[in-house]
Length: 381
Image (cartoon, rainbow, N blue to C red; front, side):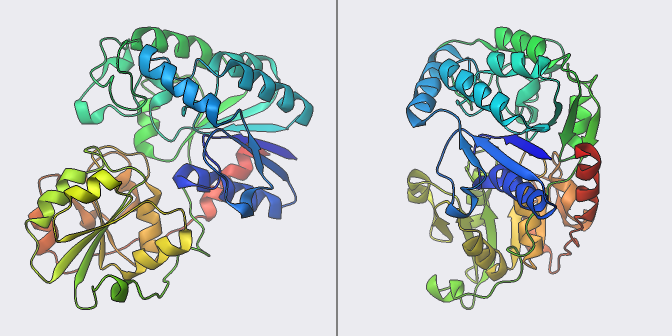
């Protein structure tokens, strides 16, 4: 069987690693798998799966136009036509969609093909972008317009950012037209929380399966290192945070506030901060830039005493799984799908930073992934 996955990245970031994890499992079972991607370099070990859609120049042009016209997903015409021709030649048995945003695909061209291709189609949603007129998440701002009609977007300047035009009304209508009525399409969500939202959206008529994200337990496991020595943390308690991009939605400001509450025997380590954010960090926070080395991440997770995920809206964050697989308990806010991967005792309110510091012991989940594979087998076969 031949499976084609489509995602913005391959082998990098949470969604990119989810794709390659699935591909490796499929390959071991004798199937052939390709991952079509739009941006960033692919680690050498995953090159055998990778098929590039377009190029970096095309991504930059698409992004630039979207910054002006608020129409992410409606450029990259030539790249998408060329890709669809390749798909027809490759002739996969199953097409598995992941993140289609990221300035690399033309939705109209892709879905015109999907509507008539006769293939089995699976679409794993990693956020809410598929059923909104602009944003990837909306809980943080308390917006429910996506249930009926997006207009006058209050998050126009959030990803996928538009600096001028507010085109969310038209985007919503075009997505609704394109994404509905696709034969033989099943939607997968990594969390029950996101499944509940999909059932209230214009995608509600599709079959919906919940398959929690998985991780590679051969990589994410207790991993010794000299991390504490390198950062002079031998006798400190470490509170760890990891994100691909840190912003208010991910809880960046909460870590700044937390740094004012911890004592001198505790340090916060933030992985994924950019140069500008590093300059803002107080002395009790150590900033480390984003890393795509899973081994390095496993070492950092293992060195920490507790992993804190102060996300205000998230789907089913793999960072929670990765930390626990390395033997580090996770504390998170009672928001989105983040709470579905931690024990109830480890959930705190978003004004409960003091509660985190008062707790002496935390539990961590035993990660069970066999069920995920069984459900995917049912979908594929």
